[in-house]
Length: 172
Image 1 (cartoon, one colour):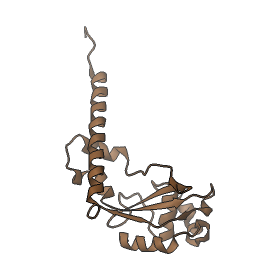
Image 2 (image 1 turned 180 degrees about the vertical axis):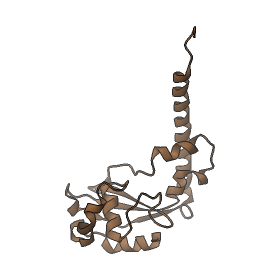
Image 3 (image 1 turned 60 degrees about the vertical axis):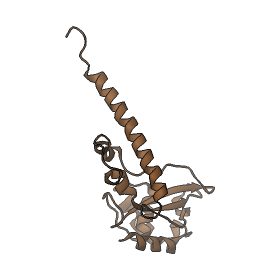
Image 4 (image 1 turned 45 degrees about the horizontal axis):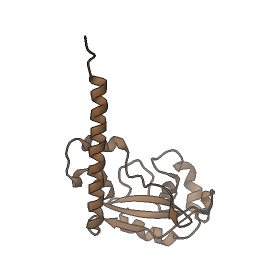
């Protein structure tokens, strides 16, 4: 499924409590514990007919990200990818456009999930925000800056840690 189709489908279910979407109740058992997503991401994929998988990209041409809202405020970070996917690129001086982070966020839908109670059946999704490196170039310059700053810090910390473990004690 292309990201434009995903956007259209999310707009169709916007504001509808998840418990009222029959496709979710029918398929929920399949989702739990079988994919690398938070619960709201799993529910959204099921609701729009996007196959559950462990692939690096949700859509053919982009990514799907959810963020929880409580009292109209986001209370959590948005997870982009796992550290194990980042580490190889952090020390090889890849250009920003070749990093795993950029590939994941080059084109994505950010979908707020209103968590009005602890019961997922009461949750609903709001209008998705379509974020694209082709359109929001200024935003992506901040992402790039943050990536390089974080990479530099991580590589420095790893180098220092490795040098401590690799030192040969005096007299050996």
